[in-house]
Amino acid sequence: MSFEPALQVDGALKTFGKQGSGFALPFRKRSNGQATSNGATNGHLDGKSKQTVAVNRVSFSVPRGEIFGVLGPNGSGKSTLIRLIATLLIPDGGQINVFGHDVVKDPMAAQRLLNRVSVEASFFKKLSPMENLLYGARLYGVGASTARAQAKSILLRLGLEEKAIFQPMEEMSRGMQQKVAIARAFLTHPILLLLDEPTTGLDPRSKREVQAFVRELRDTHDATILLTTHDMMEADILCDRIAIIDGGNIVALDTPANLKQRIPQTNGHVPSLEEVFLQLTGKKLVTEDQVA
Picture 1 (tube, rainbow, N blue to C red):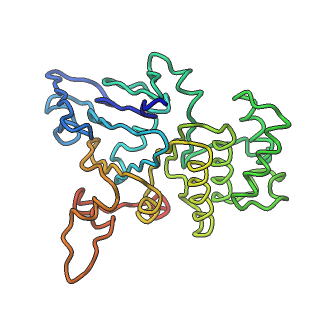
Picture 2 (cartoon, rainbow, N blue to C red; picture 1 turned 135 degrees about the vertical axis):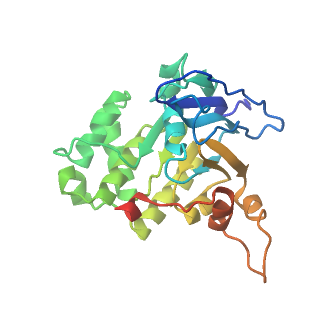
């Protein structure tokens, strides 16, 4: 039995913008196997640089079979981190391994083991959910007959009506389209699933259906899941451990229960995960729906 982690992130760095003079950001080694990252000045590498640090020398390890959450306010770097892991962005420093495969040196091997669902998922809107899923399955080498049966089963499991499976995507609500995006990722049976705010735009019932399916995927298909979300309750009930990221830095990493113990109880009140988040970041989570 291999004890190799599903995901290993060591000193991941990603910056945007032009580099000026005086670039310097030393990497502090981990001391306890958890997560460390060095600070930056006002989101920049130093006072003379025009570069903005999106992910600042972040390190953590995710064992196989874990649901690992990443929480952070808008602009904190969590989606950039997901894109680095998914090979959609190239890190400027550090190393990221997916089941031992370096995402820079061997991206194709990493891509075969993972899939990503994001809030901005795109489709061929004139095609139906079934047609979109069959197209995606073909890209991953899944046969048409197998993909068709699995696609229908997954879409029904996520709460789509059978007639909607064969209607154009452009006629569906955003929430329903997001369910199709989740089904498309599940269809390839990834062993590392990256869920970037997957339930944004879904009604409460649809959220519960997706959350139940996430647990099922982990428990019955041996999948490892990395989840970013603005829903504190979702993070609390789904995640085995949570990293809170702010300004590109991990400011805390622990189980939900241990994170909530960081705030003393007052008058018998048990602190919520949201209260922990507010204390550590000083910021409220603002969802895309709230901005709109």
